[in-house]
Image 1 (cartoon, rainbow, N blue to C red):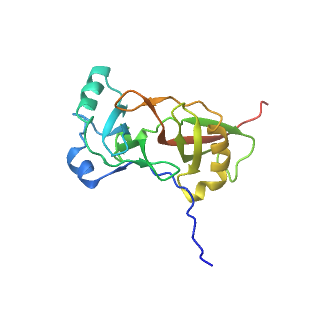
Image 2: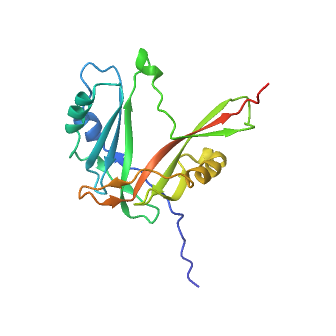
Image 3: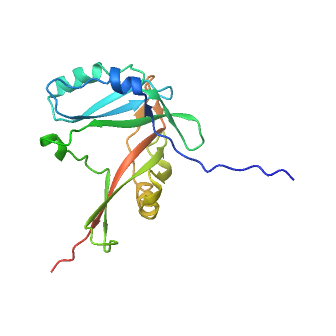
Length: 191
């Protein structure tokens, strides 16, 4: 009898190469920290960009993104079937000093709960979702193994959410892999 191991499906986010981070990733002039979300094709080429931090005029953000579009990030994403896929990556360079250290990305979803383990009022986790051409979640998994118990609830919630449809370079809708920030917030009963 031959036994063939079956690997669990694993979503993989785009990965930035060392060369991209050290040589190609532009830092906005006068910035003491920045965060940029990029949409990457299956080959790892950046096809979309949004400056998340610092807040800047639209024309300046567009000029910044013009310098990033078309660059080779490194590696593209992989979907739940192990196929190359479009995907999102957020790269943040936030110093541990000054006003930029206060930067915190808004959660993609906030879930109100009646109980929380420990004394925390808020727990933040990240899940990775495979979203199809219609904006529907096809697969979801925790980004970190230690978030598994929270991720089960988070994935159930994101599966009921309609996400944005995204287009590839040809303008046609594409499926994609995205890293989603989920906050569990302790609901305080009205007194």
